[in-house]
Amino acid sequence: SEKPTPDSLLDNLAQVAIDDDRCAMGVGAFAGLIYLATMHRTLAGGDSGDLIANACSLGVPHPPGYPLHTLLAALFVRLIPFGSPALRVNLLSVLAAAAAAAQLFRAALVLVRVLPPPKRKTTAGMARWACAFGVLTFAFSPLTWTYSTHAEVFAINNMLVASLLLFTLRFSLNRDPREATAAALTIGLGISNQHTFVFFAFPAVCWALCWLAVSKKLLQVSIFVQLGLWGLAGLIPYLFMAWSGTQAIQDSWGDTGTGSGFVRHLFRAEYGTFKLYPGADQARNHLGEVLLLWIAHIWEETLFVGPFLIAAGVYSSLASKGAARRGGLVLLSLAV
Image (cartoon, rainbow, N blue to C red):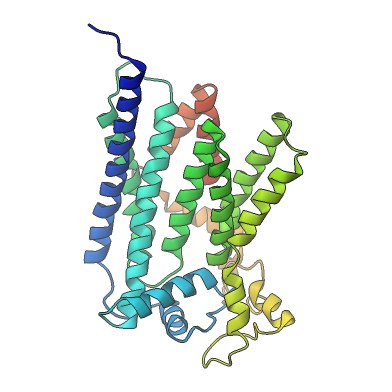
């Protein structure tokens, strides 16, 4: 048989990339259709009413303000020509959750590509099916599914977390500065959407700093300036929150038009900055109690396969070397 030429190898790689992207869009579309079929057609419970009302009026929702969600929801309310405002903002969650599934599929596939081959030959199709299974397990876990069907900030948060994971994994393999800038922008946008994003950003930033130290680029000021500017660009939605506070919009929360009021709202002073829950039930504010509850319900919340997938992922990461171990540990740290 003839040896493959460099051009044919490049063509094959390009075709694989195209097929991977089509599969990612297929996974996202499948999840999105299920979300759409089960989406709330009107107002749901929880914070939905507050988020929808402020999307309509361009006001500020409850602390910490969620400016990215408000801006995107406001666009959906104004650009979608059918349905009630509630339905339009619910559609935002559906599309964001579908995009989260697609991005998570891409991230999983990047990791699978760098793992050492098993004893039995694994085809590209088998890798894609395995990634699709893992991603859909997440997409249709009870909490993820619930918050993908009505107005809430969590679907956008999942989309940005999956994107951060993808960019970080790619950068760990190719050192492409475009992946680093995309990750920095994603971190800023994530914090503009929901503050808990810092728990995902922190391990990614720590890993990046370790890499800069090892590669002796830690003292290159230009790198920090560039990444810092992209991160700040992601925080631009907070300017909207400051502007909105000067407009005296009915039912808008707080006094974000003043410096002290903005800081108070941003850091959730009315709720307690480090409280997980603003109510009187202190058990729900204790991180240890919440983690124990999560562990107690991990079987149901991961459709009874999560612990097995987690164990397999940890084993594969620790048993690998080089790029595969780096990618696996990045994935593990973000997951934790």
